[in-house]
Amino acid sequence: MSSSFEPVIGLEVHAQLKTASKAFCSCSTKFGDSPNSNVCPKCLGMPGVLPVLNKQVVEFTIRMGLATHCTIAPRSTFARKNYFYPDLPKGYQISQYDEPICEKGWVEVDLQDGKRKKIGITRIHMEEDAGKSIHDLDIDTLVDLNRCGVPLIEIVSEPDIRTPNEAYQYLHKIRQIVTYLGICDGNMEEGSLRCDANVSVRKVGEEKFGTKTEVKNMNSFRFVEKALQYEIDRQIALIESGGRVVQETLLWDSNKGAAIPMRSKEEAHDYRYFPEPDLVPVVVDKVWIASAEKGLPEFPTERRDRYVKELKLPKYDADILTAEKEIADYFEGVVDHLASKNDEAVKMASNWTMGDVMRVINERHIPLSEFPIAPPHLSELIDLIVKGTISGKIAKDVYEDMLSSREKPSAIVEKKGLLQISDTSAIEKIVDEILAKNAGEVEKYRAGKQQVFGFFVGETMKATKGKANPKVVNEILRRKLKME
Image (tube, rainbow, N blue to C red; front, side, top):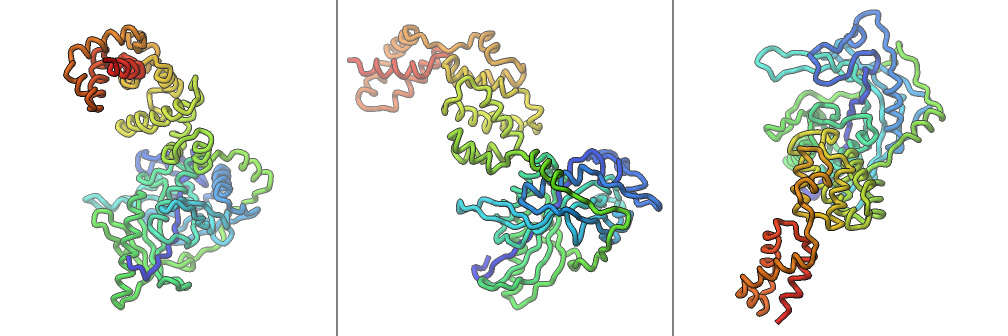
């Protein structure tokens, strides 16, 4: 990217709300059902039907507005957004236009240089989704209308984003917020979180915006970053070669690594917005807002900062643990059940959650709710290590057994005779035998070859099948090897 140009990026994020029924009818919102099975006269746009607003859609939108520091409008209205496409049977979407429910908010993102930046949110409004056209078959285009009427919120950012990485961080933060709130599952691959980007470039120092293009069809965080970088580079190269950026809509093709022109960019007047005549205004009073505010969770940034300050975790650990609410909840469940909540035990809980727990759910492609080890059982395993009942090595074997048997770690340790040997005299006898068998290695150590010490530790652990207390082994070896 040329250093004489500056990108200006604004994101429009659509989040599909986790309501059981659609925005204006009682049809199911379940993903993956047979095509055109979750439809009715209302979402199919049949003559004579009337929409009825789902109250939970408003509730979820208010919560998102509060979480992003928006002003909640006491009165907002719906409008018809008119356009014609095979997957839009009514010929219009019910959306909000000039009177949205949430305005003038912001979120804070972490930048690559360690600083934080506020990115403004212009508005958050409610709308219904369109259906889905399926083009990738060897037959004519098919249409699935199950998604018609599924409730969405559209989160429109200010053009405050200046790099593809900032866009990535912003989108990641929006996903964190909607998933922490429990209003959207944040699954970009299934389309429940979708992102369009408005991109332009201008000379550094200029205040006037350049001509913008809109990039669509970015279904992963990685593709958002790649698509933005591609479009920024394309616009700069075009301007530097004497060309002119045309306002248009582009589709990101991840296979080609390129943005393909789709159509000229629409303006608001192209949609011929007009007030929705079948729906009354949405009125939100102070009591409703106060009730929604009480139900807000602790958000990722606050939770991360608390882990660093109160639990003494490294920022790296805290970032990973709070990235997903389910992981953070699991980790806190482990910490809450620890018999000893000292720094060592808490850091061990962090390591096990980030490492062994997340490894298994990623390898098995399962949600954390299906993970077979409950937090109290992992806490018990950590307590056994901290107390010296079992070694860290034995704990790994016990953990694998817990995954399949779902038994408590103490029961597995007792059943398999895995108790750690901390009897000094028993370990000392084994150490004496190892030193006697390896007199040459002993002389090397005493001659200054410190790395030989690890050999003796390994031999002792091997002789005890990993059951010897490593701390006791180290103490005895150091004492014995100093003796003449």
